[in-house]
Length: 448
Image (cartoon, rainbow, N blue to C red; front, side):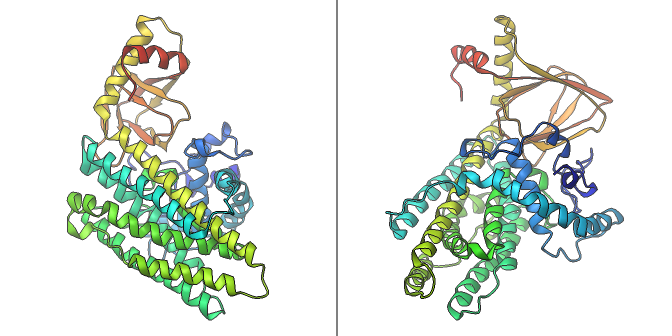
């Protein structure tokens, strides 16, 4: 895994790199491998941990080595990175680590039991209800943010990046079956993805975002990458055909509901052209899903019950990662959308530490000018406290927070962020917020 991650096209971002004009430069923070454990899978509660973020970044890179990014290399460096990205060495190393990464990131989905007594229609309705609630929560979190337009742009980045990559995967890996029914059914799914691709281009233009593939790589949430990776993983494995079919079916329905949930929000932030259309009538999608179930029931020569279980497993798994992605986005917006509040929280935490003479674990960093911390997450709540020097700090795409000596902010676990040193040197501390400190803080004021 180290050999794969340490390849030069996965190098860390440099000081001036906030967005990328080179789609083959995709930082994965290889130095984090020194303390991360990929031998055990993450569970659902830790699906947004640092190893899952890194794992999903690597998986997308592995999968997209199958996709031709034609005409995207425009500089000597991007040409070199393109050659490395499509090299035999990169592809072989990727395939060697892929199974371990897939197990690490998705065992929590694969191992979840599917209630066999529940009807497929009941499973779909229950899954859709969960998805709609999670999508509505995203819209509410953006509305409640201090800067709703900035948080809407963070949402647009996820839609134009990881979720667009999902549609590219659908078009690339779904190959028409020799069977006329399945060929037509899957072609319809690929057509829907093609329609969404045009909509995401319109959204990018309306939100004034670059359309260079993965220009906003640093601002992709790991949970959003997981949506693409989960679907790609089942699509590229013919033995999981019926699981892929279930994933496609629920993805269509969720995309329909998502357009309804986010249409007004995006139109308000970026204009009418940014609003996604449902594309399909829900009745049409439900008809196609019913056709699949009838086809499975009438198949001969294959174990129908096993195919139906796989179809339901695909529905449940895809919906689980979609809901998890929305839930994670809500948490990111709740933090990034209230920066002033999180700076005050850090000051209150620091006062508790000082007044109660608490001994807390703390990490200290001394970084030189232009040192950039490629966006990442921590697996613990912590504070960021500047002792000397200055830095720019990003919690989302846009103008950074500029920190000077004495500035601080509260950074919850699993919240994506990055920084760059803007002076000759910057010394900063990261006190860990443990149970004792959290309890002392709760007596001072309620937690958010």
